[in-house]
Length: 159
Ligand code: ZN
Image 1 (cartoon, helix red, strand yellow):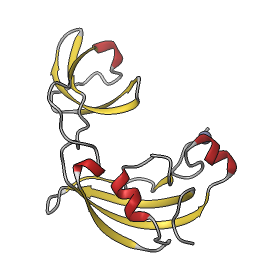
Image 2 (cartoon, rainbow, N blue to C red):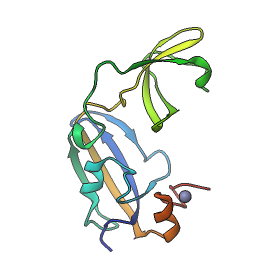
Image 3 (tube, rainbow, N blue to C red):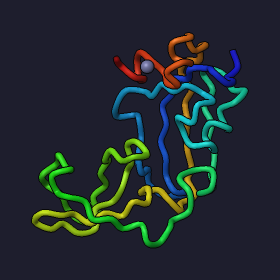
Image 4 (cartoon, helix red, strand yellow):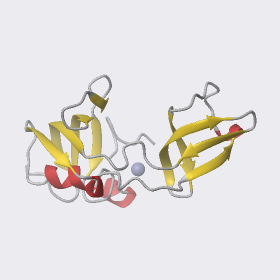
């Protein structure tokens, strides 16, 4: 079946800036499962999956607007250190913290005794990204998955 809204897609990916080494890849862990049409992955990647099938492999170049947005100045925030579970914080490190907008990736700028300065821009903000994708399975979402807005089972949410 072709990938469309409310498909569940299980896939491997790696992402890099064009011509550079991989920034992140699923190949060293389990493939990812996502529900199409619910904003679970960046728009440029979701768009590139539509109409494709299990077994397809493809590469797509995604502009910042279709990925993690433009890099914005003035996005530094000071966060109490107790919010970080990881004790070994170093500048330049990427961390994921819960915010009012859900889980967000950010970059550690400066580590103090009781506070940590972070750059709230997504670590891949402002970057044109090249995704290499290998589509493993495609199936229809269950009613429960549609209601929850995410994939269940292998590579998806485990409740
Ligand atoms: Zn769920």
